[in-house]
Length: 393
Image 1 (cartoon, rainbow, N blue to C red):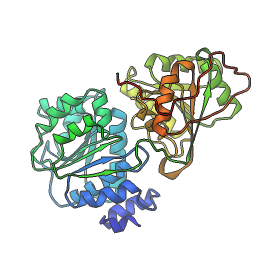
Image 2: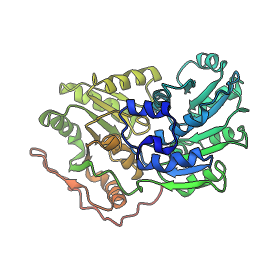
Image 3: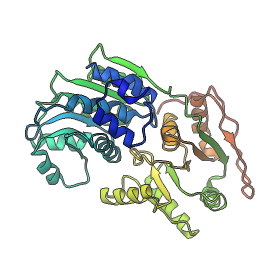
Image 4: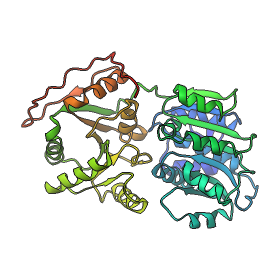
């Protein structure tokens, strides 16, 4: 099915074609007609499924009118949990709207708010924002919501995990009741549904793509059991012996990111890190170098990595296993995007056993284990219990 069959106009179809999109993904096939019909939508979709285009393309279609934007007004608001994701979504908006006369911008913390206020004076068709910075701008009367037609909550589950629930309610209380609302989340948990009850209408459509216990078969997943004190040595060995071209390496704590960069550097491997402790300018610079290929190895905390979207990323590495288990799906979805092949490697020590059980229970299968010569394990990691249920923290 071509994009033109979904009800999108020629300029939008031309833009996606120029980006190399050949056919819509499952989420795009289902979501775009619903959004174009004017219905509210609640959708469960994992990263890497084409989720952003599924809501941006129909928004562009509906916004492509001759209606002028009043000063300090916005017509569509897309809320994202992190600065990196807000930047990535706005980049997608610009790419998809290249043949349209529509304006967009992203606003987030860590940057000059006065510059953002100045640009909002002209009015913006599509504003991508993190909740905190949006409220700062609203409190300073730098923008008004009277003309808002569309609201999108992107990665709603992550916004709740990050503690944005009160900010989200403060925002939705300011918005016009008559609007079209779209909520996208990796999972539709009870908490997400509770938020949806205050965001989308009672008759909202609901769709689910790529159930949370499934991952793309084109991502080859494997793990290595390793003692905790030899993890960095093993990682260096893999990079050198397997001649890795590039890797996105996940850790759980920001101090672990800096430490790992230093450890790799001592072995002649140049790496850098992004985490919440670094300035926005530093994070943007490092991310730009990684996307361009100048930087080969990026160490990132899970939250900081939200919004990293890199074509043909060869592999992701879980240096630390994540919790909750659903975060594993998100992480490995950074590779194997748009149907491409990818590789996901996890370094698992005995301390990770409970997290491994939860992840493999979610996947409903054991992850292939490999042994690396020269790295015998003193503390053996048992085989997972597939029906394991970890108690919520």
